[in-house]
Image 1 (tube, rainbow, N blue to C red):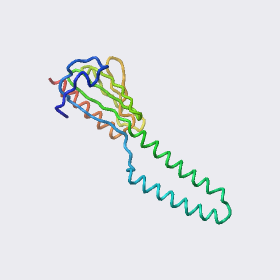
Image 2: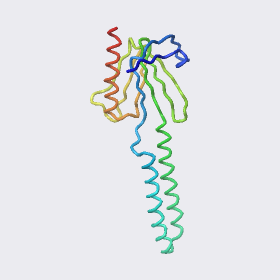
Image 3: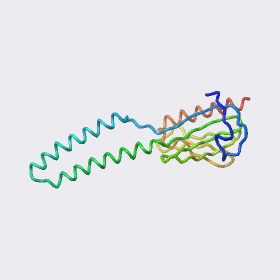
Length: 172
């Protein structure tokens, strides 16, 4: 919860004016369990193992295999870099008296914002949430899925926190 307020310039395409104080503010990002330091250590280990195996294979006379060991290193590096690039994805939910704004930033930095009226908003998540259970926000017959990259327990926590914030908002 924060005392910050939004201005119409924060979400120019949403068409709202003076949204008021922020009641709920959440930034959602995909989790990556391997830090950059861990990634570097892993790559050094992969290079070390490949160098030892490549030396043994080369000395045994199977020198063409060495190229494949180098290709393995490049593929592992590429896969991890793609994973870290995908982790730049972000969703930001901001709830005010007038709007729930959902700002999405894709891995390339493109920004798309949707705005829903919170007065008719319904938070829907099957209990217990499974790995593919979506967290849907319904308003005026339209559903918006948020947090699809979150694990089920985090989606449940987000749904509970958003329901509580909507409940507080409706008391006013």
